[in-house]
Amino acid sequence: MTEPRTLSVIVPCYNEAKTLDTLIRRVLAADTAGLELEVVIVDDASRDDSVRAAEAVAAQDPRVRLVRHSVNQGKGAALRTGFVQATGDVILIQDADLEYEPGEYPKLLGPIVDGRADVVYGSRFRGGESVRVLYFWHMVANRVLTLMSNMMTNLNLTDMETCYKVFRREVVARIAIRENRFGFEPEITAKISRLTPAPRIYEVGISYSGRTYEEGKKIGLKDGFRALWCILRYNLFD
Image (cartoon, rainbow, N blue to C red; front, side, top):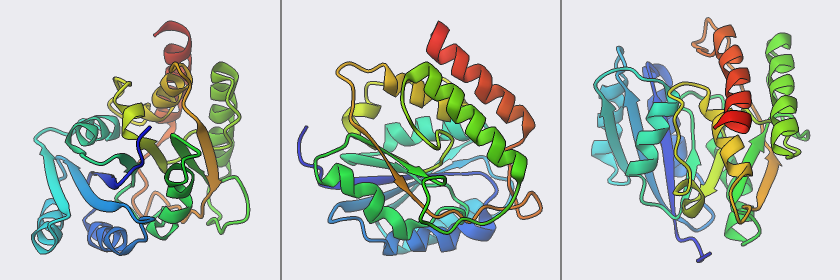
């Protein structure tokens, strides 16, 4: 693996006009561990002012690019588009809300920049960081899905469903993503676990400022059942 020099932050976006400008400015101000930054916003046919907000910040900073879907397809589809558009040696996934803090990029990028890792997951359950107290059953569902994923992949992750996933480009290039929605998380975890030679996977603790449904949270019960199906599908049948 060559020494990484550039970082692509992919921001899938659907109806996040309230937070997008603030989020992108935090990304642009973040410490990228010496990597040259580009930001790829993939708007998934938002119906609010997300596109206008993205266009405004892109007009002010050449490091920001906007890609648009004409039809809403889901987070997985937006990330699939982002992977194609990204040019960086390292690819980092960043949600468009403010649940995950770009100030923690050095922690996420460190194992890759140091040459120790090919993939890094940011865990909300690895302790030592501030986490907003919210839904008990969401926490239970996350832990159960992570446990089932680990049983299939033989990994010992604590947070498979986390947004913060960082990859060397070479890893992403070897994976074809099929899921259009939140099934992306178990799908990519399953496919990473089966790569040969096996990539070096690290996990670091992160803070988390989760949203309520009133504040715009989108994932729901049907996404949990879909994630369960994806764990079985991409580990046993695909």
